[in-house]
Length: 355
Ligand code: AMP
Image 1 (spheres, rainbow, N blue to C red):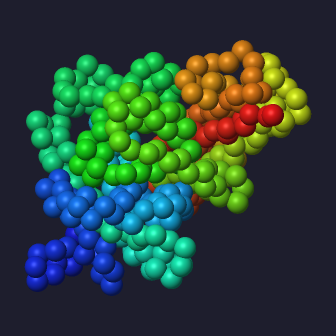
Image 2 (image 1 turned 45 degrees about the horizontal axis):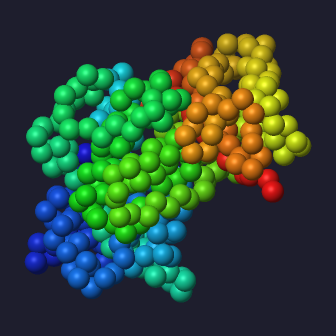
């Protein structure tokens, strides 16, 4: 997955990113050797798990981790177990050189800013052979192997469309947590159901780890940043804000006193229906078609659907929209990474409790 062209080996065989003190650790053994002294000197270690193709959303989590910990480990690993057999594992963007350049730049920024406790100490970029010592168990629903499953939350919403997704996420995170032994782990609210799964796993397996959730980083027009946005291309990118706009409309309904599912969720559904009707009125070479997978109004702890929001507890509004490949592509049109396949966008807004 990751090329090694942008790092250098020192005389002692220690691989470091150029012009930085960031180590590149490519095996479980190397990570454990790096980790051991920090247990003894009681320095706090944070882990920010990523699949690479880094963007500002990832960087914001690393900044938060550096403020609160002596050492930040960023893992860069495209975990095949969380991709379904028909999903985009083969084309998932791998941008190792740009990623490490970003990490070196960010690490300098962290050094210059006096408010940080720590810096980026290491990038953990293991191989699949290392992460799955008994052999990769496969991506099928009935694959046999050692898995962590967190139900029922892992079966709802994203888990309905992607039945192996949260099993893959929980399993790889359990492995990463056991390898890195972090004091704190940092996850983005962008993937809100993932945060509920990870918090449940940490609680239910008594892992001595604090789970910190960072806010969703968005483009100026509201689209939540995602490594998969590169698939969109120009035409679909301009329409991809429908989901965040729909969630905002539902949030407005809640803020104006709406509590019933039909009122709050209904506001999001109406915006999406109207936006699709507008697109369908356009000519095929101009329009963008999308399908709504779900719009959910759910309990903040369990993600079970709500009939009404209890204002003392609030709720989670979340949604998934599939942007279909463009029709009638025009000569020279930017279709996006990998020819512009269907792209599933997800987003969410937390409805805060009101006193
Ligand atoms: P990924 O590389 O997509 O697996 O994401 C790695 C981490 O970054 C996860 O905790 C994500 O929730 C988080 N993340 C992804 N996109 C964003 C975003 N736009 N804002 C904040 N965090 C994000």
